[in-house]
Image 1 (spheres, helix red, strand yellow):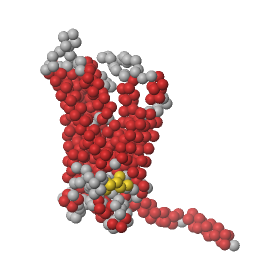
Image 2 (cartoon, helix red, strand yellow; image 1 turned 90 degrees about the vertical axis):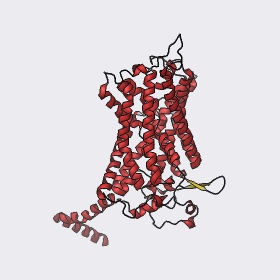
Image 3 (cartoon, one colour; image 1 turned 30 degrees about the vertical axis):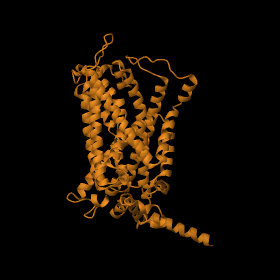
Image 4 (tube, helix red, strand yellow; image 1 turned 120 degrees about the vertical axis):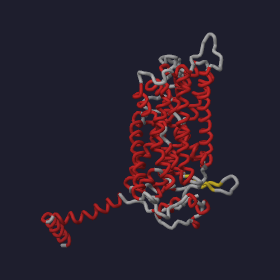
Length: 506
């Protein structure tokens, strides 16, 4: 009897909706309005300030009884503030400088701009600075983990924050996998002893036995060495916060020293200070700079080269992901972003000048510019050292990208947009027993496994376009965040008169 009554009521309700469809629209409208309001809801300033202060005092993080957060939406754990301006600069250089010198310098000089590649680097650097300065300003206003994700959440709303996080994942996780694959291919070529002739069309016989070559290059798009290097970087991050920071600083210092050697060595060879071998004169000469911009390339070639070299600066934004671990984030993070772009631009321009002086631009190797340039000038030891240096320092890009991805997911976990496992901290005591450093162990494990799988099985050509599109959208979204803040409150901080100052955070 009750079942028949229920069916009758449902039938009457359906008939009523058919006769009066506006009733259904009136009931649905509040639901849709609620969904849209939730999608465009911005993070509250109170919550943002609480999250920014989570890492200020390490003493409240180690025991459950001493947690002092008052908002249920705020996580009770956060990394300790331990990074200085030097650490941030080393991290930024580690993120950015890599193939921009070792590969793109030769490619741009040979195919697009000749000696004018240095001008292409300058134009690309100016465009990168136009995107970097908004990051520097926003990082001072909102010193939070997450970079663009946080900026979009506070200024635009949750839906834009989610869009930003997807693009950041392409930049961090996708780049880590792509660079790991590139390193795997370079390492195998180095083991095989592949050396290009002066015409770059002949290869010497492989130095590896057939079974080893089959193991390292099994085919089907599988890259075992990419899996190994991504696993090593993940393990280093899991080893400890201080250990990974030390490795980042050390490898960044080695990388800058190597590039400085390449630049100085190129200028020394081109200046004629080192006497030529009578039987084999060196081609290096500053006369290769004439004409500085070849007629076949012109201004259009310089601009096309700068469009490629722009991606040599990508990575500076990852510095903003470390605001929660920086001792003085309001001042140090913006400075680190600007200094990273400045150091990159100077090194890139000088490297392009040195390379085009060592070898005529149309003879520069497309795949191994500096090593081959030293080789044809008779410095075989420098050729081997630069080739080994590239293989040694390139994995730092993988390590910093995985670290940035973990910090992004940590920021999202505080807002309950990803599982709480990404925000769980594991603490370790320092050697003197006075300090405990928190590490995102579970977060790093998940990020590392995903990067290893992508790097092993997905070819780079399927990642390249996705990463480029994601980065361009991400930079545009960051600019919109800054414009929104300035439009909302042009004379005062968008965060209000009681917003955080440098002294309050530090």
